[in-house]
Image 1 (cartoon, rainbow, N blue to C red):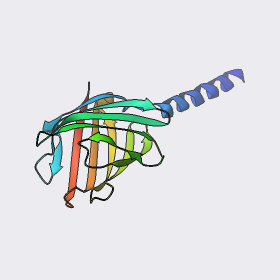
Image 2 (tube, one colour):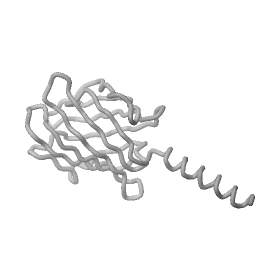
Image 3 (cartoon, rainbow, N blue to C red):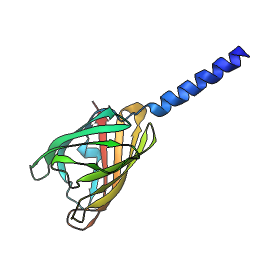
Image 4 (cartoon, rainbow, N blue to C red):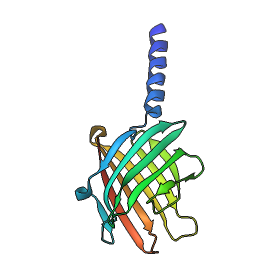
Length: 156
């Protein structure tokens, strides 16, 4: 009886620990060659994203350079399932983002630009043993045109 109780407690603890994990945490560098954006041209030259665990969510800091040479230095802290978070800094085409966590390796989001046409939904998947993060997005860009993108990041 004690063995069954111990195994049940262990299984419950492992389930809680697995759900509590966030495999997106870390530093990620965009692989431009594997990434796509339609319609062309690809909007960024370089991108590095640092994701840190935060109370019930994640803190994200993104740095890089747009295709036109403008700097990207934006960040936000969002709770999974919480209200939209405000993007601060420069270079982001949207100013709010809402995040939902599906599991430790999959997240969905909704992005919007207040007073502008930009709105999009996306999903992020961690794969390849935690070495690859792919964010696929579909929506309306800042010019009011439909777009799709697939950004492939490699863990640093």
